[in-house]
Image (cartoon, rainbow, N blue to C red):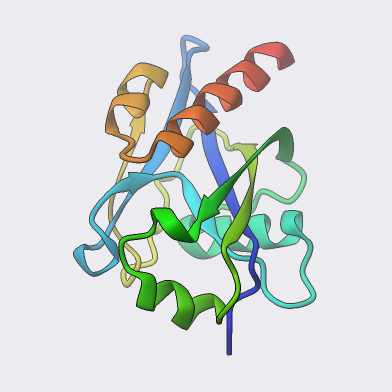
Length: 157
């Protein structure tokens, strides 16, 4: 079955004992590209973006973030022309889909247990400062989204 042509990206964060913000990044397995990113995925049929984001966070990290999830008002598009694997794109979304909107969220989790990774998707995680996380991200869209997430979190304080 084809994926819903929408994506979500969630930057999970926590506040360390000194109050500074740390972002959770996950490293994809080699089969999935081997790059670092926040939690991402597609809503399933019948799910809203927010419901998909909550489910993806639970599946990829084990964290339950129902009440902590917040849309940050930032969105961008993944473009078919930017994907080097055009066959994979068509396999996932079908013909005629040239752009996928990706809605960005944040979710705060408390200090405590480490995430429980989905082993077929991710092989490592790290809690990072904003600057460290920004340096690890491969994709410009992910970097812009992290900057927007930091602005949103700062405005909450």
